[in-house]
Length: 302
Image (cartoon, rainbow, N blue to C red):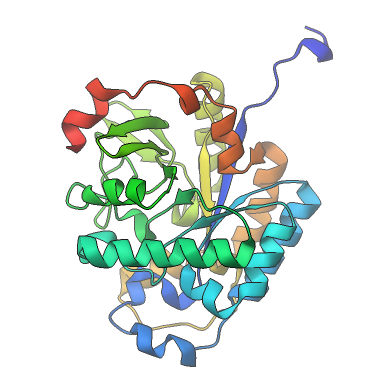
């Protein structure tokens, strides 16, 4: 096969959850929201570093920006947009969906969407819940997202985890048809291994496990399944000098493990695979116009 005939690489979705180190759910009980403003913020510097890394690699990403961050640092949101990246919503106050009522969730996602659109001057189509907290007990949130004008959601992780996960959920993007409209659901990426789905989507799995695991996993999704992977990271994950906050041993392990390795691993990842925004990946995928896999997803989800 000549170079001209070689298949084009699958373009994966690069996504960033723009939040500060103290927003992470493990610190909720120790550092309540009314104390956030007194803590040293590092989100701007860390996000700017990611922007530089992506510019060097000529990669565009989707930035799921926390409304709290956009409220305090609107210029950061404007710089992200000015560099050609997609602005999406991470909610406003970084509350787990299943810890909210439908009313408070609606107010949170409406506030975040309006703020991000005002600041960036662009429509906000996508949403990701803090800590992938759309689970069997918070599926009502998907209807609210449709009603509030979101077009896609990436809040379901099809794995078993102590904090999140719907292990029987479809592994690749699909359309949910609901009485009030439709929503494209984009699960975090996994590799099927017998009855289990193993996470290869990024975040703590990217830091804690060897880089070879992520590389193998994305290769499996791309080459064996012919599907794009959805990778995620937080700005604080490239910041080994961030303040150390109090938490239990498991929380400290998950949050601080291998922070010094993340930036170099990210650069290697950008070299090894092709990436683009989540919106562009969906636009170039059959899922954008596919019928909903009703027989697979909806009986389990609803």
